[in-house]
Length: 137
Image (tube, rainbow, N blue to C red; front, side):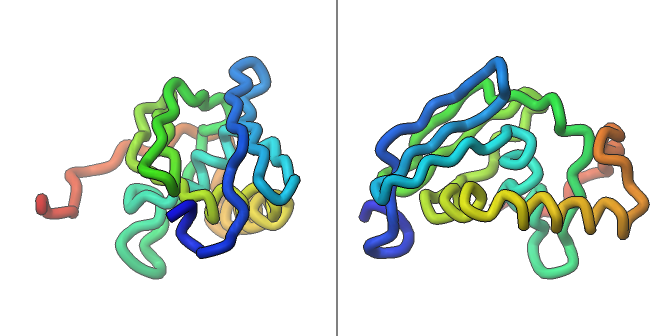
């Protein structure tokens, strides 16, 4: 299995650009995306960001300067970054990376809408969270 969607483009190159904080991904269909680390971090598919269902999303703030300190391949279908803020539970499938790269403007607009709706500042530190409501498996 090359990705989650059969026949979907797969990465041929992945490069971390530490100084500009950009992940560059070249896909098999010729598309090349330069995705800011911040956008990847705020778009994490993890339960810590997405919640466990609709309406449980956690708006991410204070991620403008986040870095990717490690990037691990997950099988033949995804990567899992370790961000400088300690977040490491997001697994980014090739399909998700392609979507984030191809629709960056839409993802940023949605993020800005959510910030405005919440009256939140993009650069404000994340509030400290209480104990986890997730039960161990």
